[in-house]
Every structure is written in structure tokens, then in C-alpha cells.
Image 1 (cartoon, one colour):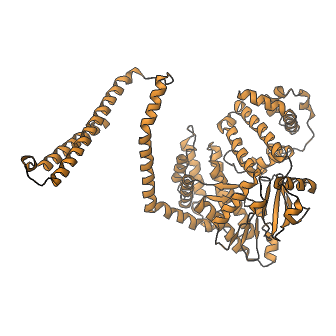
Image 2 (tube, rainbow, N blue to C red):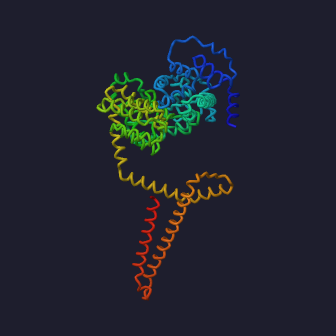
Image 3 (tube, rainbow, N blue to C red):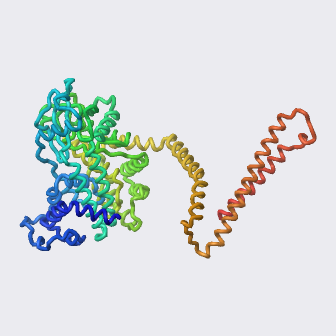
Length: 562
């Protein structure tokens, strides 16, 4: 069934498949098309091997970047997302991915008007007092126009390009097909589960296509910084927002791409750098929800030196468990403890079973030695994260996508703040957050909370055991459960089952005796007249018998555990 679906998509998207194949061949990647069998599937003529354009002698990774740019918006966006995965792709390729340009000509205003009116169900003039026809910015997915609501409020209206969702979904289908074919023919693609990586990219990109998700992201970040005068998040106008149109507060500021202008205008760039770093660490480490694309074009400064965040299509989320892993990793890096770093990687479950443990420890030790004697003011967080990802890549350790996004965000933030103030070191801001995380982990309440959660999970598991057993027995009766036992183990298993049954029977007997004794004691208290029975030392004898039975139960458990 799956094969038929894939074949059907290939037939429907044949023209696009051929475009992609020809671009790959023209840039020297015909061997890849041939290796995965796409020549035969698409019935491509072999003569196109000889139709390569003359090109300069450039590296393979540069040619890969050119291919991505020629393939269009979908692949450019995916390339930008892929630049986050330094644990999956080699450093040289990551370097080229960071150079991808997302600049495209704007869509004619007539098409923008049609989209807005269709989405809102009313004429543009009924909604807006003014609407600039020339966009203030244009990208591969959408473009932004300045406008005024009928109430007089100045807004920025982000409008999705026509038919972009359909084009992206077609390209994503094709990319997933190529990833599955690559997994069949290349060992590295199978090891990194390339189709799952593409699925992560697909999820991220489709979220960017839904502007209501971006609006909710903005609202959540604004709630995080509620009451913080150093950070500004634009307000969303939900009455004028749909999945294809996003209307938000228009805030005038100077983008951080204009660092020289800021310095010439008398802005305190060191203070701005500190506020940017502090905002990101607050979002990431304190709340587990952060702006994941904080490049200078998405950041601006207002006259009061507050920092304006823009474009909330890409955000990162950290579960409580992932926050614990991240805090442990930061603490290990702060302590320069290579053993602790490796332990965290193992705890995440990202280290492959066939890893060379000795070589992994050696590489992490080398990384530690490089930074061991350096003070924090001389350490580049970007370099440290990049080298840690390089170690992960060498050992085929696939970092969880959430943490990969954290690493890329930290590298981006460091570049931003150092562009504002070359003497500023982001680790000066990171260190207090790291120590706060350490104190939080050592807090007795945390231990109590974890113990309570563990107890609740255990209780739920035990409560669910009878239902699971009934389910297994039901499937057994239907003949759907097969059990294979080695004969040498059957006797041992039977003896163990007998011991468990005896222990359960003994425990039930002890519980019944305890209930009987409790009832007897209550009756003793309530009985006012004396009798021969009540004059007998019932309590003492009962306690002695109960203790003896508990002792027998403990001994039997201890002996069986041996």
C-alpha cells in the first residue's frame, strides 16, 4: 500500500521530480540520482549526463548549496533548518547552509489584496484605513506590509504567498521519497534515519506556514516577559489573523544589523547585548520556550534601549526532562567535567550501541583540555558548541532536535552580542543561569517532587498490571500470543512462579491476620465488661505472631533474591 502511494505521488509530481533530477545532474550529482535508481523510475535519458554546464572548480558542499538555491523556497527553508543539525551533517556542509539566501521578489499587490480579502471575507478598505502596497520585507513564504486599522492603530500585516503551501507540500513529499531511497542505498543515511530527520523538518516548516501558530508563539513569549521593561514582543490582533494572514502591532526600531549606526547614534551597545542574551537565557532555561531564530534581522532596539523580538515562526521547546539534561550539560561544561558530559549523553539515550566508548571519552577529554585553563571571558560558546557537535558527528551521536536547536540558538545569540560589543562574552550571562540551575537541582523540594512522581508512576504501573494481564490472556485465548521458552529455563521459571505464589499467599494471610487483630483491639476497647477472653494477653500475643510472620516473609524474600 505504501509503495503504491509513493508511486502515485511520483506520477502526479513527475514534472517536479524531473526538474529536481536535472538540477542535480547539472551540478554534478547525477551519480546520486543513478545510485538510488531514480533514472529508471522517472525514465530519464542517459544523455543528460553529458549535458552538464561548465562550472568553476568549487567544493562539493558549495555545489550542494547552489543546488538548494536553484531548487527554490522549500529547499532553501529546509536548508536553513538543516543548518541547525551539526550533529547529522559535516561542518563544511553546515557552513555552506548558513549562507543560504531567502530573498525573493515581492508578490504583486493585487494578489496580496485577493488573499487578505478572501481570508477575512470583506473588502480591504473596510478593514484598514491605509495599507501600503510596497512591502517592508519579502521572503520565500510571505511578505510584510505596513497598514492602519480603522481604529487608527498602526500594524504590520504578514501575508502568505499564493499557492506556496501546495508547492511546499509537493516538495516535501518528493524529499521524503528521496530520503527513503537514500536509506536503502547509503549506510550513513540509514544510520541517521534520514527520513525521520526530514519528518522533523516537515513538522517545523508546516508550522511556519500556519500563522495562527506563530501568533500563539508571540503571545506566549510576551507572557514570559510580562512586566520586563527590557524586552518588547509585538501584540497580535486576533480579529485580523488567520492561518495565512498575521496582523500584529507595528513597532518602529533599529534592527541590530545596523550595529555601526547604533554606535554612531549613541546607543549603549554593551547594554543591548546583555539584554539580548539575558532574554534568551530566561526563555530557554527558566521557561523552556524560546525564540529559536534570533539573528540580527529579527531583533531591533527601541529608543529606551529595550530589545524588540520579531518573527516567531521558529521557536524551541524544552520538556522538563530535556531541561534537566540541558542543565546537567551546562553544569558539566562549567565544571569542565568530561565524564559528566559523556554521562549526560548516555542518559539522553542518543549514543549508538556500537560507539567506541574509549575514543568518545578521549575526544571529550581533548575538548575539555582545550578550554580547561581558559577563563570564561576568553571562551567562545559558539566554538565550544560547534566542537561538541563535531564530536557528536564523528561518533554518529544524534543529538535530540530540541537540544540541537538550543545549540544553534546559542551560537546565533553569541554572534549577535559580539557584533554589538566585541568585548562582551555570553558566558558571563550564562554562568549565573547555570548556577541557578545547579541550586534548583539541589533543592530538597526537587528530590521530594521526583520521589513523589516516581511513587505515583509506580502505583499507576501496578494498578495497570491486572488490566494488562487480562489483555494478554484474552489475546492468548485468541491464539495471537506466542511464547518461546528455552527448555533449560522452564524448571527455574516454574520454581520462581511457585515462590511468588507462596509469597503472595503468605502476604494475604498476614494482611488478614492484621485486619483480624485490628478488629479484636477495637472490640477490646468497646467491651466494658471483663471476661476470660479479654483477660487473656491478646494484644501481646497477636503482635508477637504478626512480627514472626513478617520475619518469615522477609527471610523468604531475601533467600529468593539470592
